Image (cartoon, rainbow, N blue to C red; front, side, top):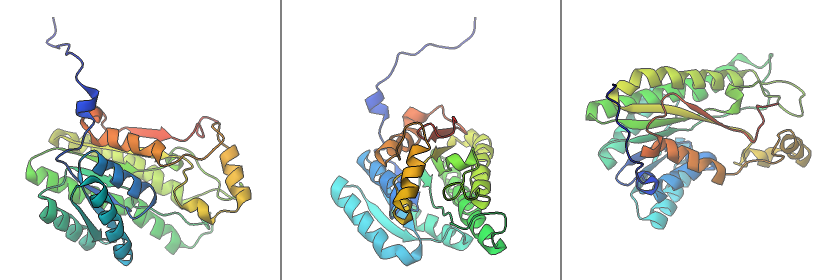
Length: 272
């Protein structure tokens, strides 16, 4: 006989909490980052709103709104994720304010409209630096703090369905090169770090959203919005309510058996 024990099912409600946890969200002044930071706070976590130094005043407003709404502790920290020193200072600032870091949503990222085979090398490098190298540095510094403090944690990376497929840019005029490369790399970065860090009790996973109403759509013409909406089986964009639950699942004890997983939430776009 083996020594595996069948346990009674425990309370889902009791495990779906972040009470007492200290969380960081990068790219948090708006869009996905703001939504997940707000959701972390609703589940009881103290949250650091991390975004570019140029947006620190906007980040402070978001932090204050969340603190007032949920009664948790929040701080706003300016950080350029392409700069290692910025990241080290950010992690120290959060640790000094909260005592430690338990949950990280590494969400900062960009894409550009002129993403194609002949794009300038500087633009290609910029996307890789933010979407991939920046994610690696944030994950590394936060994981090292978790290890130093002797507790586990959860790191959730924002990838994209572009880590699974090669997206067209605008109305299939061209296909993305740098963005898809960065997101494919981020997906495998997640898996590589996951297998190395799980021995420390640190779970690393990723989410891969499809077309979401997160701010970028504001710069599209209506014909483009309609085109993208009709290109997926669900025939619409997703919204923030449809992504926050998945991130919170991975952050909480409900996600305790997710290790190196990528959760695709794309309205069926990658099926066809």
